Length: 292
Image 1: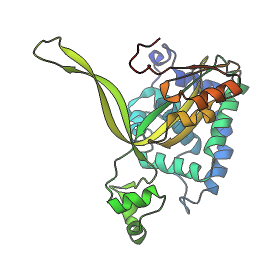
Image 2: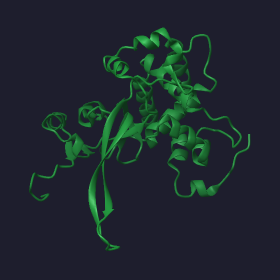
Image 3: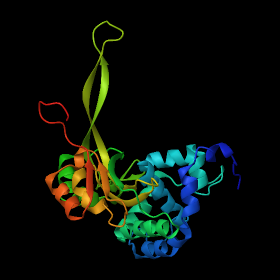
Image 4: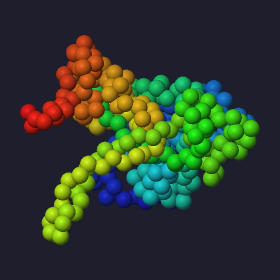
């Protein structure tokens, strides 16, 4: 293999290099192989890539909130990703469909939660104790848009495979990729500046609602080390705040919890109070009043 040894990658403090040095990813090989065997997907053949390397791809996705397509591109484009995955410059990169299939097999085997719990245990064993509190956040990860009929959409929402797809198995594939039955539409709100009038400096802020189709990565980050401690995935239309109890870790030595306003609710505040956590969740702006 041909590797580029570039000290410039390490000089700023590459978090992936630090992660590779802290966690022995080989400890995941046994559980990964067992989970893939339990999965009914892909009978009669093995994935064309090493399962440990593929699990590291999932870690990259969670850390950087990448879609399958973006993951494929970023691995090809970024030397730090290639180094983390032990790929040479001439190494074969898994495509988006391979990443999707690997994740689906682990989900079907109900192994994702256990693998990330073991990932957290590996960090703890190496002295990276969860401390300083935790940050909870979610990011929409786009998926390829689907072109389905109204009847197909209704069947998918009910959790069924459309009858037309069952009659024609090839229908489940779209442009060589799997038909995605789990992704959903959501709206991402953001701010932008729009030019107003003829004044070159005349810009006004506006709120934009951008429709997005895909999933959400929900992660809990150790505030002291910036490392992922808890992880979950959902359809893009899932409410962020409802995932907070699943992401908050009781093993963190710090009592503080940070999150944006999407997580503020009476239910979540009561949950944190019962667990003796200190809430630093952003407060919503009072209606028609200034932020205190």
